[in-house]
Amino acid sequence: FLEVKPFSLFSLPLSVTTVLFANSHRVEALRDAATAVEQEKEILLEMIHSIQNSQDMRQISDGEREELNLTANRLMGRTLTVEVSVETIRNPQQEESLKHATKIIDEVVSKFLDDVGTAKSHLMSLYSACSSEVPPGPVDQKFQSIVIGCALEDQKKIKRRLETLLRNIDNSDKAIKLLEHSKGAGPKTLQNMDGKFN
Image (cartoon, rainbow, N blue to C red; front, top):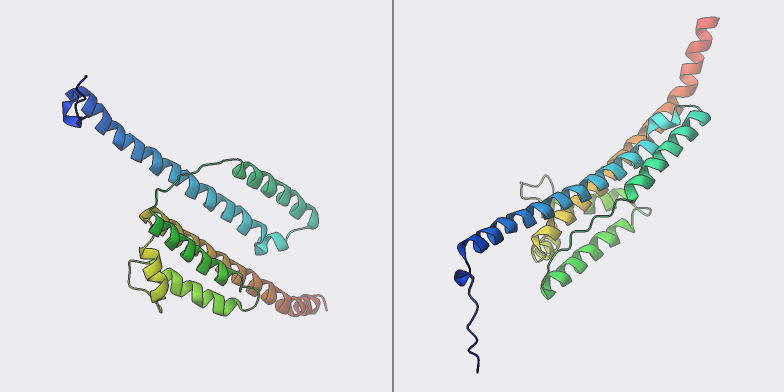
């Protein structure tokens, strides 16, 4: 019978071991680069969406707005053609924690139309639960314990999603306030202009 010797990394030539360890750093660098591309894609899509819903777009002519929207839609379409996926290795407990955390965020998002103020406050408490800094407001302790049970990469993605949601709410609030301000200032501005010609 042939004797099967147990495999050991230390039995390999030093050059092979060195190459493997060197490649382990390259693998992590590859994952980091792919994650950076994922984040850049999210930022670009958010930026294009914000421009389309900005107050500046409401203050230009219909023709200009249509042309800019066509450009924005083209850019968004090209951005969406970039497909990057970095799979996270999880154990069953981490899988369950991620599902639970995602469900909680989705439930808050579904209540936006009913009560934006309450939904925003809830999102803030969820975001505070993911922050390593001293939170400015209350912390959702239950959500915090769930997030801690997630894989480290998932924790970062959860925090990033909450940041994006809060940013979108703030941008929407600003757009609404600017629109209300412009509506309120409209008649007064017209009166002032009329006065100049009288």
